[in-house]
Length: 242
Image (tube, rainbow, N blue to C red; front, side, top):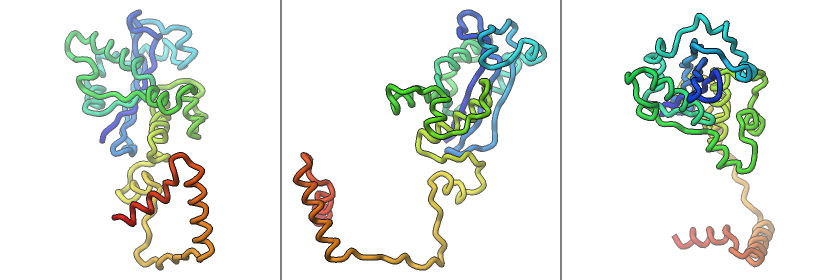
């Protein structure tokens, strides 16, 4: 499965008010591993950046004066993300801006969902952690992910951090190392290291008669005190009946 973790920075909050994308950052995952492929571009928006936005991302009008426009890079960008699942934190914001830029291309491109599917990690986080803060910084703290370099927002840096957060949220690998072989990738994904073929058999220690009696007494106590009964005893009964 090919996924693109995507983030943007903009001149302001509302494309309907003429605000534009000024930075795009993407990293690629294939089968939940970083491939090393990424897309990163600063853009000339042909308008001034709001002061409040500069405080967030630190990108100045002067820095963007010699950068390409969205129309100059749209084909390259769309080729990179097409036929992938986009993973975006607060997807309506980024998707709205990208669709706004695509619509400015005078019919050359359709809206984003014609080319990609979208997974919103903010929606996912709210389902997993209802009533809690689910900003990217809050998720980094919750999943013990290093975001110490994030003094300001940056599209590529935020995409890299979100990739780590997304994998942690969905139970995958926690270390974003590049794929260096199927066995290594499987170990990174599952945390399981294959045993050597010449490894000595594991020693099996059977329970003593006293331990078996104590175990059964504990199950009987759980069975009596629980409204739903002891699940372990039910499993043992099911096994005997098979």
